[in-house]
Length: 83
Image (cartoon, rainbow, N blue to C red; front, side):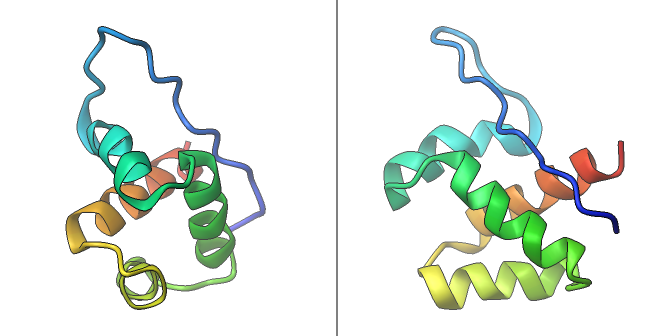
């Protein structure tokens, strides 16, 4: 994969995000970091050649993130990188 920045989607008050992005407000609240930071971490690892599940496992072990949250970030990043 080539280096590309995945930009966090805007969170518009009153709207409900769909798909993996629906987890993003909860991720920010639970782990205290903005989504852009998480996406930058994940994209760096994906573009370095790590697999989906390796990145998920890394978020879980390094940042004590739950599986669903970690998987949502990686899935969103991979979909955006594929565009």
